[in-house]
Length: 589
Image 1 (cartoon, helix red, strand yellow):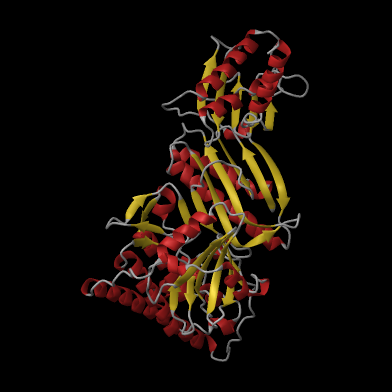
Image 2 (image 1 turned 180 degrees about the vertical axis):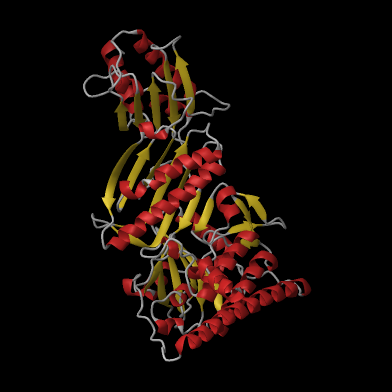
């Protein structure tokens, strides 16, 4: 082989190898800020110290194995002022050591670049997609102050529709970022958290798309105490309403803490929190006419009667729950069904397409984080509900497998029955029994009084009692112990006789032994129904479902949603507890 052939082969090899490797991670420059009130001369001692500092930050952040962890470092270079320089480097929590070092090594392009960059400036902040550096002639490490370098940017599309839609979207973003802030501050040592908020209804945007998922990220420097990190992030959250007004993406960047949200997934790895948004508030209904002829005395008697009914109802509910748990200890456990072979549960895709009229929009019953649910009719006349995994969902397949494993062999009158499954081509479907009265929330929180009248006290009591029996079976009587993790009014379906059936096991957690508690790094569920120790510390046990059940009882008794405080036009002080505590306070005073 001659030298020309050898060179040509080498060039081809290099080209082929270069196509196998992506460009440097974090190469996108988001923002930079130069303090132009200070400067240094070219080839000065300060410039030499700054070069050494930036080189040290890139090397240290990519190689540390103890605290501070990989991705974070501070350094000081220089013997004395005015040539002494302080610096801090931080990489995003999902960035490995090699990519972190590569990202930090880009900072000299800003620090010493010509033109409008920071050449000759003694203090600057540089933010890339995956890393940041701040350096200064002052000892900013001794007195952290996020305000001195705070930057904000807004990207992406905007939510369209009325002001309420944009306000609700902003409220969900704030709720997600708040939950992530709690997780990063109190449940990690890296002070980093990512997560999602899924909305069943979705939001229309100016570019014509409908978004159902919000992705969020928060991060503090890992040297901060939990309280300081949470305080830093809260200061950014307080500025979100002004910075983001219905935007579907944005970030607030700071040296000591930062946050970001987008409707697309912009981070690596699995989300630590997976939340489900509450449904939007229904339009206000017309007030029911009241009889004013009875005077104040009549009104007080009516009020007292209403409060007495609520208290009596709660007492009966608690007594029934206590009775159920006593009954549990005296009865023989239900047999675990072993005669249902999962292979016999397979449905043909063509059959389901025909049953749902090819998943026609008019047969759509609703849409959740998993995907859409359609009503169908099998050839022999049986009505079914078909849950269809969104093709674009990266997490739905895992949730489908989880739901199949959870409920394929469960048999109880208060659990929705799984009839079968279909996995052909790109389609992944679960087939359930069809329940004509839909979910509890469609009646309980309906704006029409006619629908709410379908839930008299005896029916509400039966729903509470049946839900308690279903939970008891999942926690105690089935062979595989199951924690539902998403018990809420929207996941309680009602049959023709208004009997409750627990549904949607996509987020359920299975336990194969008597142990029914653990610590989890991924918190999932619906805002307002999750126990505090689960959200903040990741403590997962049957107590989570019990807490959710308690919230559900309060909603059934009061007819009010626990998340009303997040809805547009509702006073901030209005919470579910206020609907309960205020009448009781008046009663006992």
